[in-house]
Image 1 (cartoon, rainbow, N blue to C red):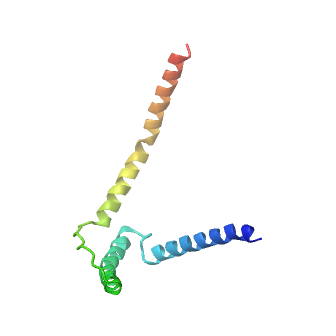
Image 2: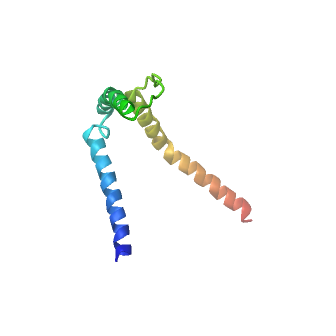
Amino acid sequence: MAAKILPVVKFATKVTIAGGALYVAYDSGLLGGSEEGSVALGRAKAAIPPAVEEWMKYFGFELPATPKIEFSPLNAWNSGVQKSIHALSGAPSTVSDYTKQGLQYAKNHLK
């Protein structure tokens, strides 16, 4: 009986963890627009260093200093959207070209 219940419990645990992570991401604004993502990143930058320092004191070890990285989610989001839309706009002609090449290849090799 335990052998039948264990996979169900494992699956339920995984679904609960994934659902919780999704809820936290949605609640913190990570799944919203680029402005909400920028605000969430700012909150994370403000909250993570004090938490890390507290844990370092608790466990008694020291981490090296983190490098400063300038990253704008707003610009990254916009460039990603632009590249995706560009790829989608060119998809019909690209598929047509590949289809023509495939048909020509088949014709040449089936003679």
